[in-house]
Length: 128
Image (cartoon, rainbow, N blue to C red; front, side):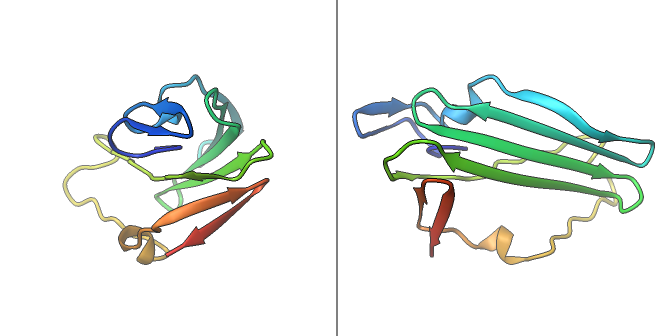
């Protein structure tokens, strides 16, 4: 969800749709690595209403039985903007089923919310 989360919103003279623009623009993808044991796919997009580009790398590792999602967002503009950045990951079969276990390298990922994120050109500054 980016650059806003939740309901439609209005900021700086622009109306943003439910769950943000990132979920409604086209994404490109490329297979970075693909073997019998690992698949790495890079997804990328550029938003139209704001000067942001997004890159998401998804790694599926059969040996570790893991799915890893890494995401970066870059402000390609000159102006600092306030945004909301959230994940709304949903799984179903075949990833989730009887006996499935969820584990995270950092429990805080699941429980911590940043009150806002300020982007400066190329960097994200988080405030709790």
